[in-house]
Image (cartoon, rainbow, N blue to C red; front, side):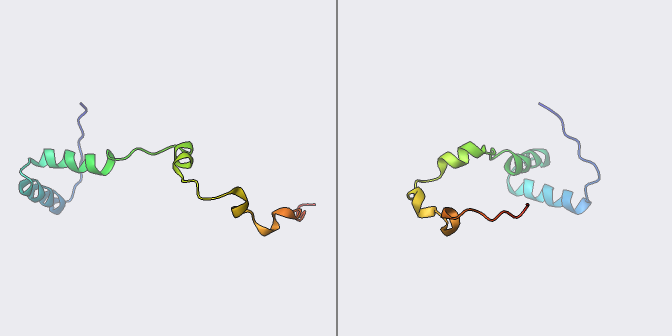
Length: 78
């Protein structure tokens, strides 16, 4: 396991960490690990393909056709 050293922490924040640790029956170091795990370790970013495949099938393609799809788009860069 790696070691993490954090410098320059405001004393009031350290005191709140100690109080929270005591309330949870842990050392300040264990509380720090729990906070980091909760903040950073919980979720994994899903790929674009995973997000798309998880979307429900909610209709036919024609249901989502825009009104202008049948008309040629204007040529604005000529």
